[in-house]
Structure formats: structure tokens, C-alpha cells
Length: 228
Image 1: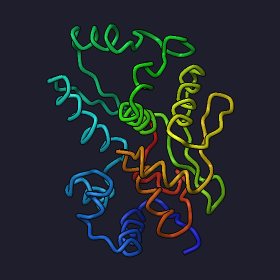
Image 2 (image 1 turned 180 degrees about the vertical axis):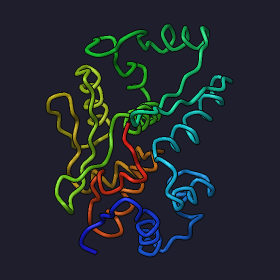
Image 3 (image 1 turned 90 degrees about the horizontal axis):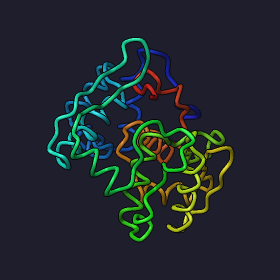
Image 4 (image 1 turned 45 degrees about the horizontal axis):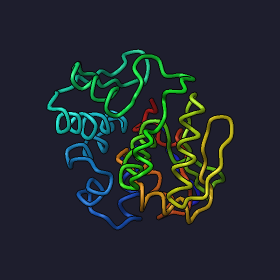
């Protein structure tokens, strides 16, 4: 297979091709990308979005587990956005006063940084990078057969911290105009082994590249994955 591309309405065919090439069962694929069996079959029915599954099946339950709060998830009616909201003064105070995250607008804020305490623990640093990657990053095509990891932020301070985190963890990365990149194949593979992802879109693209040798474009899988 030279290209992994399908028109709208061909999602089911594409997923079946992934299953055949990976030699996984549907349950195995669902386990691999971190979604339920039901959501996998929603993908087959072509009525689910990858970011929606990520927020509803991972992020929202994680908030419940950590803070004992049930968030509300809103999907944009006129765009591809999805929002996860909950209200708690105690959580707000914990995140701002204990963790050190800034409140309010964060674009170009020098206060929006990876907490320094996270750099003292590779476990915390890896978890932080995974969350940033799943929301503000992705695996993309550098060349047809060459993948790249990209993290993008309008906040150059945060991007610089991501760059420092990669270096501390032994990754070879580069930074340009607020974006952090990992290009070399061995480091891309190591990224998914060490940092990983809970976002089905990223996991599917990585799986397709590993099995077929071709990096699918985001537009190739837009019928089931709508970027935020």
C-alpha cells in the first residue's frame, strides 16, 4: 500500500485495512489506542471523533478520579472544538498555589511553564509531556515515509520548557518559532515507548506508519479525527 488515504465515507474500509495489516483483533486495537470496544465500533460506524473519544473516555474520567468532580463536555456546533469544564475553588487553588499553574489568559505569559518540581522527577515530566502532546501536539508527516513529533504553542516559554524536558529525557529535538520537533525515526519510536499517548488519532497514525511504512496525513483521516 503506497498511500493511506480515503474519501469521506471510507472510514470503515480504512480501519479494516489497519486491522488486517496489524493482525490485531478489534478488541486488541481498542486496547492499543486506549478506548472502549464500543467506541471502536462507533469508529467503524463512522460517527465518532478521535478528540471526542479522548476527552470523554480518558480526560473526563481522569478528572473524576483525581478531583472527584464530574466535568461537562461540550462539542462545538459550528466548529471542531471540544471543551471539558468543571468548577471548583479548591481545585483552582491547588493548581495555582500548590502546582504553580497561572490563572487567566496564558498566551505569551512567562508564568505558563512546566513546574520546576516536575524536572526533579522523570515520571512527572513524562506524564506532563504526554498530556501536552495529546492536546497541543501530534505525529505528522515530515516526508511520506518519515514521521515527526511536533509540539506547538503560542507561548515560547512553555515551548522552551518542552525542549528542556526532551533533552533531560535523552531525546534529540529542535525548536523553531515556538514549535518543538523530533525528526529521527528511532527517537519517534522511543517517544511512543517512553512518553506515549492517550489520543486515538496519534496512536492510529503511529500504528499505520509502523505497519505500512507510510505516514498518513491528518487530512487523510479527517472523517474520523477532527483536530481541535
